[in-house]
Structure formats: structure tokens, C-alpha cells
Image 1 (tube, rainbow, N blue to C red):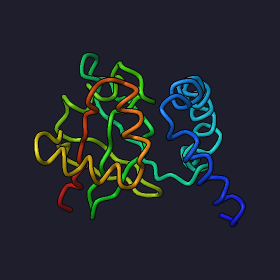
Image 2 (cartoon, rainbow, N blue to C red; image 1 turned 90 degrees about the horizontal axis):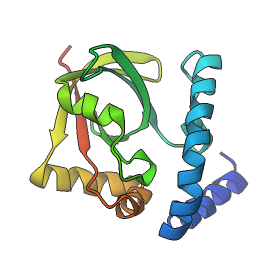
Image 3 (cartoon, helix red, strand yellow; image 1 turned 90 degrees about the vertical axis):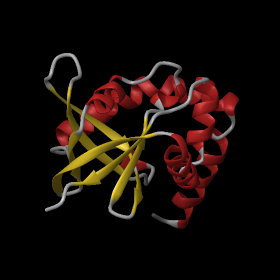
Amino acid sequence: MTARTSALSRWARRVISHPGVYRHVVLRLAALTTVAEAVLRRIGGGRLSVLDAVGLTHVQLIVAGCRSGLPRTVTLQYIGDGDDLLVTDSNWGRNARPAWSSNLAAASTVLVRLRDSEYTAAVVHATGAARDRDWHTICAHWPNYAVAQSVAGREFRVFRLVPAAA
């Protein structure tokens, strides 16, 4: 990332951290970003993501649908915490939870695709003090999650993905 790209990224992050801007710009871009993500994943063999363009860490999770039982794949931003991964169901600051959140809440394990590796992880739905601690870690890395939560008007679920013992 060049100094100019880095400065542009910092500026963009500051702009979208304003709740009014977030509500009117980011939420409108969500649908376009979702389509772009699917296209990039397809042409890049699963290795490219929209999140790469802005330098954010991302992971693919494969989890059984809570109603259908069919495998569902979702690409998410994650925050690393030691060997564990933290994800939250921000859904771009919408008031409805994303479908993957219910699937993950109903699952005990998930298949994780991270860069060139694939492994099984235990799913821990963080609550209480553990959720508060993990939420603090998440927001320290990506403060816009706090903005998205205020725009959504709901408490985001936080999941800790713990790699299974090899």
C-alpha cells in the first residue's frame, strides 16, 4: 500500500465513521459490494475479495444452514485475537441480522477458509463479559463497527472461532 493509498484509506475511514454518512452512503453501497464480492470470488477462485481492496482481513466461513442443513458460504471481515478469529453480525448497520448469524448461532463448528488454509473451528457465541471484552477488541481494530451498531439500533452478536485441536 503506497503512502497516497494509505492516506486515502484513512480519509475514507474517517468520512464513513460519521453516522449520517454511514447511513446514506455505506448502506446504499452494501448491495453493490455484495455483488462485487461474488464476482471477485468466482473469477479469483475464492482468493479475491472486496475487502482486499481496502486492506481489511477477511475469512470465508462454511456453515450448515440452520433450517435447510445445506452448506452456506459467507465472506466476512474478521479480527484476529491470538489463534482465534472474532466476527460480528453487523450486516452493514442494518437493523435485521444477516442469515449467516443465525446459522452460526445454531452451529457448534464451522469450516474456516483463511488465505490458503482450511480448518475446523469451534463456534463460541460470546455473551456477557466475554462479549464486552471481544467487542472492545473488535472496535479497537475497526471503530466503524460501533457506528454501524448505533445506526442499526441493535446489539451485534459476537462470535469467537476457536481452531480445533490438530
